[in-house]
Amino acid sequence: MILPPVIGHRGAAAHAPENTPASFRAAAALGCRMVEFDVRLTADGVPVVFHDDRLERTTDGHGATGELPLAALRRRDAGGWFGPAFAGQAIPTLTEVLTLCAGLGLAVNIEIKPDDGREEATARLALAVARQCWPTTLPPPLISSFRPEAVEAAASAAPDWPRGLLVGPLPADWREQAAALGCVAIHADHRHLEAGQIQAVRAAGLAVLAYTVNEAERAAALWHSGACAVFSDAPDRLGRM
Image (cartoon, rainbow, N blue to C red):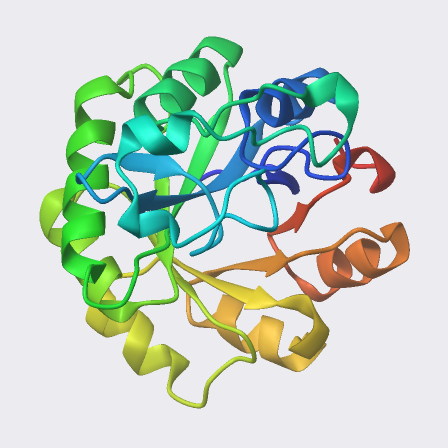
């Protein structure tokens, strides 16, 4: 798996409303070669690209994201909160985002973000969509999740696609978890990530991806310690595009 040193976080979330088409276009315009985004299910089982389990923070709507059907979610404005220039951005479906990213030549990291009890279903349905519409001419998507059940379901649905284990602080049993899930990477919160830990993970043959890094000095320290890539809201600040 070849990774660029900087991966756009939810597109380029410092420059455009996260997880919207505008954000992915901004990431591409800034020179990103790969972006990360979140996928969850609507009430009627459609994979959409949206981070939160509720609508309030990044839309003009209210309520639980997973309790509304796609048609209702599409009526929400997912851009106006960021700035008037982005008003009218809709919550996109996974199909729309993958089609857009493929057209922009962006590699992707799909984070499975399931509601409780929907871990397997979210991974299975999201991977079914991705397998259908992602072009074989581009690198296969990197699939990740904080939920081991979702990573396990992704392994069944797309066994040939790479998988990453998402963690906060690096757990003591990271080797066992990664091995059990067939992961090729550990995605860890940079605030808890030390140089010795990075080197240990790399020595075990796994890639290290650190989130969410918006300061050039911290990114440089992580790369120097052996991190393969950092996720950033502001990839243009980091100097290794």
